[in-house]
Image (cartoon, rainbow, N blue to C red; front, side):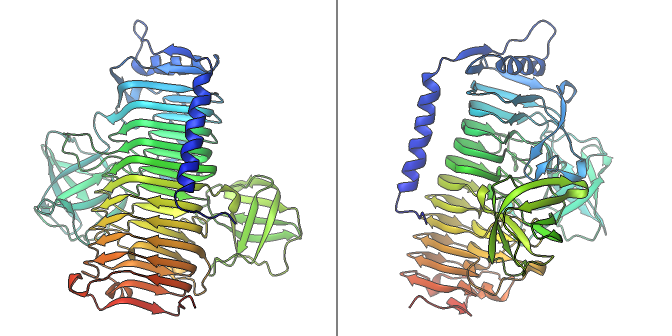
Length: 592
């Protein structure tokens, strides 16, 4: 089995990226300049230039430096697209139709040179959608929304199932705005409220009760305080800045996404993706508290590698990075000795390609008891998958078992990335062969780095192997919503949020030389892992305000074996008020 040794993987991915760039540079590029014809909108000019790129060799789409305005009325086309959870299901509530101003399909060796230009959107638009493209470079570009898809204002009154919010001129309101989610922000600490609100609503509409004052209606009573700020997300998912669907050799470089009503970047089943100085952050000087309303980046399975370096992810409404190897499918019916019907928990499509290696496990165990190779698969009505395998299925297979596709687990290298001021997690690592190093996390409401997998709701795969997290710093993480078990964690969740009781869901994990300063539960949390080493980590100000029993221990380890603890420091006098133990091990075994 391939494992990491020092910086070998970092060097390898960097060399590959450089070679790809050199290969592209050696080819003859044909410049296609964005030029607006008389009476033509900026959106139409960009779409026309991008369409021309499909008919020339090695096209280079060039933006003369400037600000380009894309209005909601300028939508160039409508399509059903593959995004973070498959074709047309990124925002299930909105349906499968997403407005896509700029679409590239099947283009080879395309470079988009922004020259520092800004694309400024209005309304519910996505931006770029690339499908079945290879050799794609996008660089030197900024993305923003004239009116961001969120509002921030001061809470001035609270009712039983309502609260009133006054907004400044940067957030013009007129009533009738949807409120899909909201959180509360403390102007004194300048962070989201500790153990505060993280509420999702079914598109309730706000009512204008006086100029620049909205009344927000909630399903249940909420404990929001007058004087705190409310951060309202009018649109959470569905309208992403960049989508790469079944693409290969992708480089996104020197890009700033200041706002978008969805995710900053989605990669769906793409190969060899590099982000270098790709930033999702509030527009400098704007005073905004939010950037993207969902994840900064989301990788839904892939091949080869994902390489993320020199990036800043600030103010998102969800995770900074989520890298998964697709989705678990639950066996619904055993059709014959070679065929099953299987479905995702939310009926998201995830048909495996022929030749894919599928790991089969019990839902409550998540350790594979066998593997099979896919012969064929098809998607049927209602999100049902018909999957046939080359070899006969085992007699032990039963409905409810879950299928995970190990053939779409990209290797990962993340280096020198700053994450701050966002709701939810920093990194979710749900793949194999990953190195995370020299990253900074500050004021992240949930965990910093979670190596995980789950069959609770999203059913995101897969049990990990060979993961290293080293030389990262975590300041004031896991203090708000959604509050988790630990800052730096390796664990799994099954039905009803239970932890698998057997070691081996995750294997060969190293947490080394990390610094954790300030969290309300454990600093390091581990369950269901075989062969994990915690070495040289320092934990301070853990256990400040625990929400679970394990949160009274700075380092908590459960249902794990071959655990190695070396030179970790948990200074007793530097811990939170509810600290009880430096290390607690439950049903776990140290390495002999």
